[in-house]
Length: 517
Image 1 (cartoon, rainbow, N blue to C red):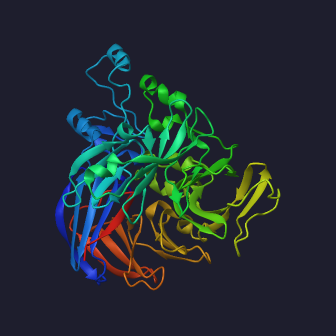
Image 2 (cartoon, rainbow, N blue to C red):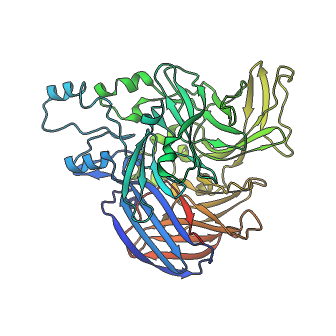
Image 3 (tube, rainbow, N blue to C red):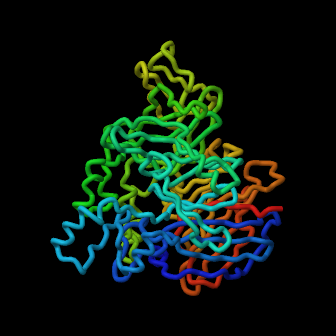
């Protein structure tokens, strides 16, 4: 299994897959996925799972004609690394390799010139649509546009040239009219989080020409803005947690001089509260009430919706931020990977928070304000402007070790019952019913699964009427990677498509674009 966490060095031109089983006729289109692929540059290796040079993969389905292709994102960082044959720009958990042609004094003085402000544009986390266009992003202010047919990198957009922000969340949300949202961070002066809106225009220039800040809120700590990887939105609100895992701006400012990685600039505050921010979508103004909970860490939101005067938020969460440290690649070598799989810090759980929206000065204190039938989450007003929330655990798995996690959650926005995700370090796929807390599992014989993507049946009669897609990185003697198609209801195999290539590259996130009819 450890081989699946190693560097992929080649691109793949379009190749044909071998179909076993039956592909439903409505599953026509392309599955796009993005993630870190190339972990070694010359003799130098990346240190963290997040750090590999990005590669976009695409599986195109048209009946039994299924193809696969892969190309690296040609960022400036990628091109500089390839030209120098070393790691020129540092990544999340990897420091840059000093120029061997410079002596120690030249390296020191270069900190005041070329090295200052050098930030990776290796967009290795997500891939998302904007109308008929495709973009890839990470947690910086740069996004790259990808040709949806060839996967060539055809351009870049620097959000800081268009808005007053320094970075943006890796994850975006997009609506039916093509509007795309993300959360930006501005950390000069008193830091603030900003809702970034890219309007859904068909004209390519208009998409970013009309980009705007749709809402903003001040960070609670001036020099330590909370880390945000993803967020959510409902009909009337944007919502996200400002975590107690926070950037240190003083340490960021000194990076050119101490040559540390971005990971070294985070601090964890276990005794502080998670602060949930809720911003009105119409006015762009945050609610005056502070919604708080115990310290926790989260990468991924699952779903958010409004019900009877409450905002319900489901997320995959951890007790602390140790999960990030456990993702250093040294933990996934042949010698250590079995031990890594047994670490408790890798296990998270699905948590539900419920925020009562109608809170004012007449609301009684120390009384549970959650009025949803059958809900065990609580929310109590503990001061004039603060409501403390205790979550309900929707899923922490069964007694079998690999059941105990649900990362990379994916849900279908039109419904609120089912969530599809992966088990521990992508060894299993999970279908979770958040209403009755039952779940189904699917596990490859020898393979690592990817974040599942749900494709609904156009004649959908129930929430889980559709197909779940997930690339499987098979390992073992003679194994070939394949794309698995599971029935959304029964969670059993409908079809698999094998490809005559050594392996798929690692990926984090993706989306399915249906073919035009």
